[in-house]
Length: 257
Image 1: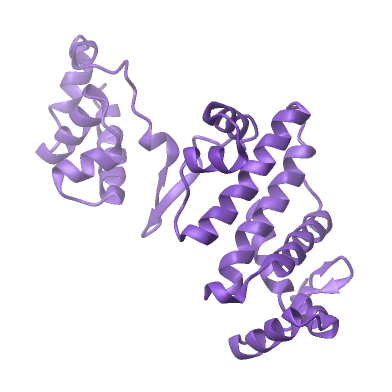
Image 2: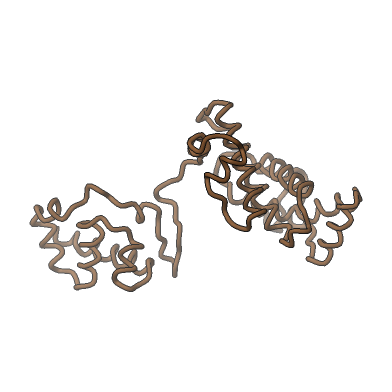
């Protein structure tokens, strides 16, 4: 490890080849003509792309070797289906294909069991979504995916929801100067109301010791149930600043509550 050498499937990832755009275009042209030698070189030249994708799935408890092999399957499928006439970079097309293949593997090996028919519908929907996004140049709607698959829209929604990966509320979605904004910060509590908070004299006393801006943030966040994004927009500061000021305000209130 000191030398930076990491073995995955017997491959020293520190020595994986790099491929420039000119060579990539040349090989893709040869591949389209059925040149298998060019295809093998192109696969080897894009293993770094697979490695970068599977790093997103670290911490799932799956062996890196297995994820790398599955990612390579996605890479090969992307090569076999890539159309140079669309004028997009290969990596733009390949990354969703690799991610989709890894996610399918993780779903099929998940302890949370989903029926085979629902998994199949979800898998076809994901593939169709990637294909339509490639063709349309934008993310397709559920209606467009359902029409392409000739299934009801609700079936597509149900299938995609059933195989969605669980996400921790403490997962960071934004960082600024080391201050992270978490998913939980964006969740609006419909039960939070000013009446409930005003009934607590101790909390009001704590808020009286806050500067005006911090007091306003606490009111919007916990009295009115606004998300940090909404508060940032109303006050005119960044979301990261709202997060930082909110944490400071809560810390100050604890001294008086």
